[in-house]
Amino acid sequence: MQTDKVTRWSVAREQGEAMKNTRQAIAMAGVAIFFGISRLVAAPIAVKLYALDCGTVETKDIGFFSDTGDYDGKPGKFVDSCFLIVHPKGILLWDTGLGDNLVGHPAEMPAAGVRFYETVSLASQLAQLKLDPQDITYLGISHSHKDHTGNAALFLKSKWLIQQKEIDWAAAASPTDSADAQLPALAKQANIHPISGDYDVFGDGLVKILTTPGHTPGHQSLKITLEHSGVVILSGDLYHMRENFEHHRVPVFNSSRAETLASEDRIDKILQNTRGRLVIQHDSRDFESLPKFPNYLD
Image 1 (cartoon, rainbow, N blue to C red):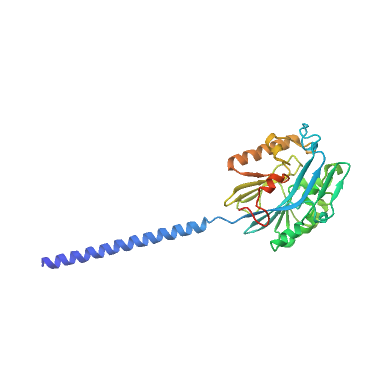
Image 2: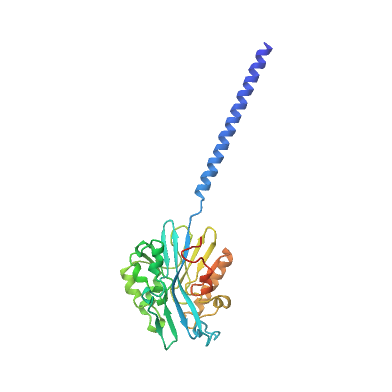
């Protein structure tokens, strides 16, 4: 009788241990599944940033890049860059450069001592990535100066992201404002999406247009958050060279000195808060610090 009790107790104990082990196994499996799903949900979105060579500007006197005389009489050479941002939801082209018609046919303004030229076309660089202009989902235009809109006519099927303020200014601008006089007419033919203020391009905060007026009334910059490289801000023409960024110098031809300085202050704070990287689009040093096309930053 005693033996039967011991046997029953031993069997019950074994069954209890088995159930306990089963519950633990189920719990562990649940935890593993939960964390697996969490990793899947939280998996980073792959965004790529390509830097494209969209021309060169040479000038005998860069004095107009500072209204305090810092560069008077000094020559300068500037890259004219465009950028391609590839996101799982689409492709954004940021600025379009001087214009592919300048490849092999430089343009000069002798009175101003300025020369513009391209050595490689924007279209050929897109082709290296097996892209045609119609493959570009969005065209972001930092502002309406001709060195940023030269190839805009290639992208009439893309959704244009430009400040309404900039379109209005370009339509009313005088020749001395250097706005692209053809841009308002092109905008009417394009799939235009005029915006007012900041704009989240893909709806996830990774590619965001920032309103930075001052160079022109509707000037804008671009903030990109990359998985490995962190925050990168493309300047547009908020700055033309690293020295203007470091010393807060303002070009003589900007539409508003006060707005320029306010926009610079905003970008400074964003860079500090995000530990971000500023890419000054006309500064060859910044351009050359980026992966050489067709390599990319991610």
